Length: 177
Image 1 (cartoon, rainbow, N blue to C red):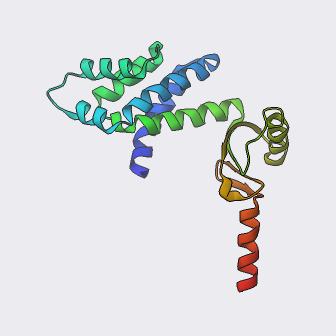
Image 2: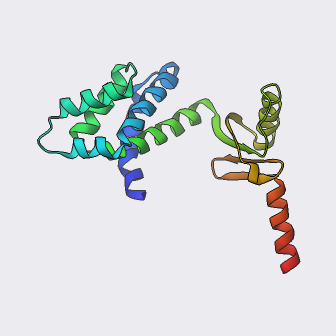
């Protein structure tokens, strides 16, 4: 995977430098849509076929993505296809997203809760987490009943686990030591 990250970095950085700061969100969504299609194994096999012209691969991906694309996203896709790097497109999208987040001072947060979080409570939870992590967070929430109670939050490489399951595991380790 490190090799794929190494391949993707120059593409992500070039795209990041080529766009205006106020276009970053829209371009990020477009690149994510392209990456979702490029992640499909059948699409990559089709693209790797030497008998298929690059324009046909481009048309297939843009049609399958079912979105409209700006010049930056189209140029990136053309470049990736021409250089035979379609497999790196999901990693390019991830690195580009990280660059956009770094510029805006926002981090992605994955919040896993034992129970559904009420829409009215979510802003309070996010505000509390932003204070805890010291930065603005863009939270995505999911439910995992196996946590029993509490939440588990992942922000980058930081984890805050206040779930009952984690506390039970800590007690188990302490008792068996």
